[in-house]
Image (cartoon, rainbow, N blue to C red; front, side, top):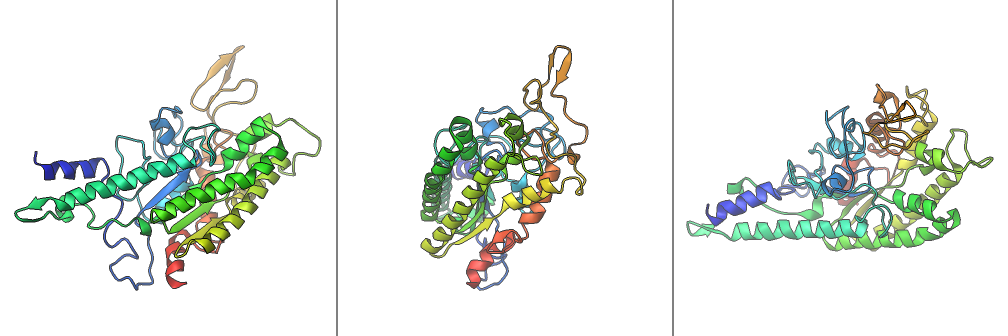
Length: 389
């Protein structure tokens, strides 16, 4: 096999590529007012992990995960699709492949660096903190550009070899992709598990300094369009309610742990301010702050009217009497623990920590249209805003 074919195969199978020469706005006319991202990159934790943790061997994702939509485990901590999948659908793109996944991957339209347990700061539940994810992206980008440059430099009958002859994009442009973030929940959760509530509050500025540094590094790599989810109501996760020491007056009217939600809200307030600062500092960039907290809390507070069961009930695994993770069962004193529910679509919580596909779909419908965003942009309009500014 000649070197040209080898490079074609390498580029198609390993990093087939993320975009095409007319990445911007559905055509080659740079003055078009239409807008459509044809690639995006995601950074985050288990809320947006599409297989990174399982590919790295950090977390086993077994049935019934994936049963509702994919029919088998897909690396997602959910019975089906998660919010990042609905972003892909909204952008009319394929679902994102995990960066570390080696089989069945498709990087033509981006990659997902999110990993279960990840936090912004080093330490915590996972080694894949945000700085590592940014480093992975930089290697991905350098690899794509390096192989592409080798490919186009190959001679063919006295002329340059054209990328189109290998059925790959004719131009690489990372600056016109969407960069999404859903991370920070584990910084708070790990802090609450290992320190006091006041210490967690005091840690928020440092967490967000490191978030800003990561964003600035992406900006230097050419990123210009940022879509940032705030953190959800941590105190409304069934896991949090079960393991939080019961104190008088610490649960709200929906059964959520008020102190934990207050910390999440303080994190979100400072995150919004930080994003506003970044938007000012980084010229020619667009930041969309997305209030996922409000969407999730609205769903929890209106669970019954939306056709869901008690939001503190979850479908898979067990934390009552015996702790067993979703996908496993155990018999203790003749009691079987961990049998999954028969109808996940009626549950907001899939496994006590992560949301079900039905809940994710409901939340996505609230956040992707821009009604809970600042500025109020839908995910499709994010690049148009910078064009028209």
